[in-house]
Image 1 (cartoon, rainbow, N blue to C red):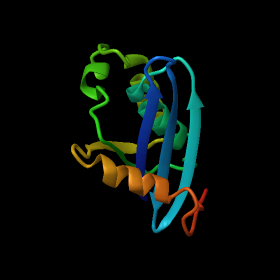
Image 2 (image 1 turned 120 degrees about the horizontal axis):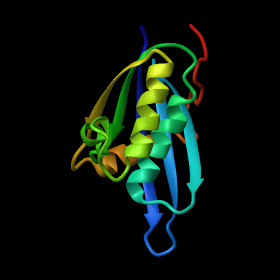
Image 3 (image 1 turned 60 degrees about the horizontal axis):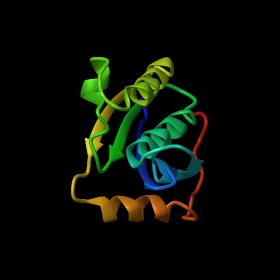
Image 4 (image 1 turned 135 degrees about the vertical axis):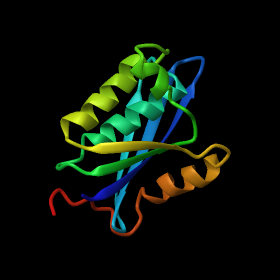
Length: 133
């Protein structure tokens, strides 16, 4: 089973609640960059939306490592609790529907490193993600 890393960052203007999410899928030196504009949101919701959009790109079962700089509340969401339970539930169901195994990695204190990795994927070499094989 392939192992795919998905990195997600988000930003949001607290007064307008307009935000964006950026995600990068990485497999075997190949990448795919995703960018979303979001309305009525928060930073954490942007991050989760980025993960959801990236998972939607997966065409076959794989092992997925989801990387963020913040705990997105997975443990609470599994118990039906938390402020973003709707999105975390959607993320987990999307992974399960694709037959993927998954693990979450929190890069606490490594925000700049994660941002550089994702932003580097905007036009980096091999901005391609295989759909099969």
